[in-house]
Amino acid sequence: MIFDSHAHYDDKAFDQDRESLLCSLKEKGIGRVVNISSDLESIGRTEALTGQYPFLYGAAGVHPSDTGALTEENFSRIGEAFRNPKMVAVGEIGLDYHWPEPDKAVQKKWFERQLALAAEKRLPVVIHSREAARDTLDMIRAAGGSELSAVIHCFSYGVEMAREYLNMGHYLGIGGVVTFANAKKLKEVVQYMPLSQMLLETDCPYLAPVPYRGKRNDSANLSYVAETVAQLKGISREEAEAVTYENACRFYRLEEA
Image (cartoon, rainbow, N blue to C red):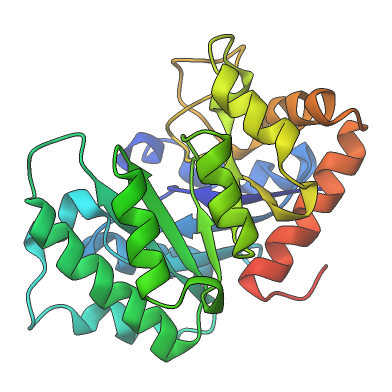
């Protein structure tokens, strides 16, 4: 079975067939999914999904691109989500410097606050980092470093940055990009890193692997990611799936099923 550690099934891309798709995942080899919030509104949608599907869990947090909407008054909504025992992580949070807005200072303020919330709640964190390698690393260190439990979602940096996170005991999220022909840097990271610190993820509906690149992604496509990881690590696909399933259970503090 495969554990999809990072999905967005509350996204409008699934509005036409969400129920039938999610109900089909078990027969396609998907054992568990964590649906990741991206803004305050998606927290409620994620909570609803966790109540409807026993195999689905959730994370509550605000993506850096949406931190401009956060205020002191509405920030408490994130913490309130963890009254639900199926909300198992803070995320996705972090820094994204690809676009000029929100301002870097705004992103950093709310990244720091959400890291502190995770520490307060003693929850793992799901980190988004795009074109912000050094600042992300520095802020994670300042927030506790190895005392945190973090996954760097959709890891996009090189081996040197990977080493920094792996040495702190954190995880790297590996998804469809690893199947792309031009993903040399990520393939090198996968070859370098220990399998015990890898999580498989879709980021669906985004980042579908080859042969579905450019199309809507879903958890069933993780078999292609697992196959590529297995080839790069010189192991069987079954081993890649089993170990990353165990890793995700450990990271999200779930009993293995």
